[in-house]
Image 1 (spheres, rainbow, N blue to C red):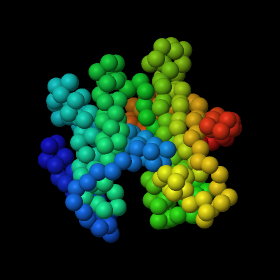
Image 2: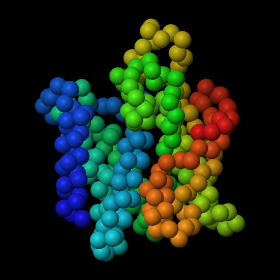
Image 3: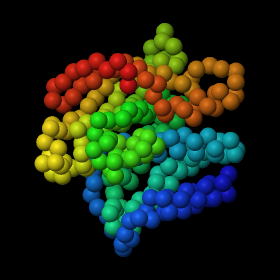
Image 4: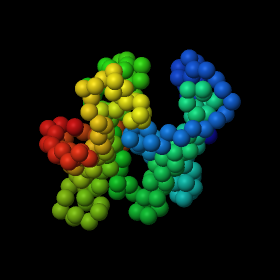
Length: 262
């Protein structure tokens, strides 16, 4: 398992170096403060990424026979370790830089996983992700992605990050084991990272950027009972994707709306 981790991590860094950083100017290691950009949607992405890598890492260490606490701490921390390597690559890019707020979000994602395992021996609150193409994706394809595979990663206006609270595990005994109460966070009307560069002269029809909060129900896929080992593993792996459901959306301008599916 250690060999697989070393080879996989090194290989993915090499791929990122070629695919992501090959067209950017290199520079000496430096940091920059991006904590106020994109209304922190990108930080939510860091949080859920390290959480999911931690889940996979814990399962792998457990499979390899590590003692319980070692598997939780080593496996659960792997996401933060892996993402720290990406920050080092960012820190040598002239276009970006090493971000301490990214490190904080990475650490929070890992500790969110580890904390639940240590406290409850299970995950009662699960981060999830949903995406639908925003109306702004085509305005700046260089920023938000030029195709579907890039947009789900870069189109911050179309991303929503959720926390699913499992009702059965949290004491609602009559509820199905797979039913969650879901709370989501997203943002809209962002053309650039910070408001001062919101391209309002070029796009005067775009109003002030908005934070968005969602309330809905959700399916905890990996808690659905099945005798199929393959299906059980598939549901576990896909558990970070939110199954579209109706939701109520609140905006910081006071707007309230029912969204049929999100």
